[in-house]
Length: 179
Image 1 (cartoon, rainbow, N blue to C red):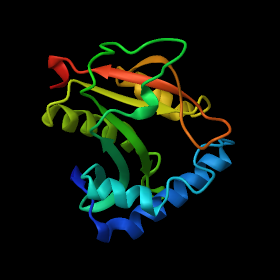
Image 2: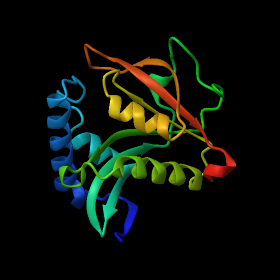
Image 3: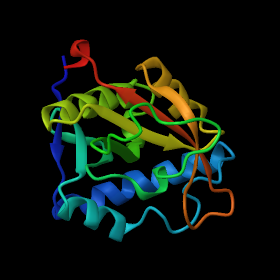
């Protein structure tokens, strides 16, 4: 059985992180998604995540299998939500999962779901009571993972720097069973 864990990324992990992101961009393009087809996310995105201790790596037998940001401050683009609302909207103490990707070497092994679960556990360990994420309307894989793990679609938010910038927003209120 493989040893699967998460750990904080450091700057020496950047080359592997950027390869995972390049592969993920190619998979999204092949799927017809406009998401991540520009310069974002880029090396600066991940350097910033690492410096803020938001960049987590999924490891399988100590090899990097995935990367994600677990943002621990309110997401500015989540302030305004349309076609719905946040549960506990006044509670700004939540984490946001961003920039999640699995290495091509590990796709098809359901590791994205496991990574999400570990990030939810980390959110709880850090003292947060809710987790949020957003995704493009045609990123059905990400929507499926979120819904499978109990996230609720809460509405639509708009990200910056994209022509097609509407994103489905998801939220999970942590319960005792997830702690």
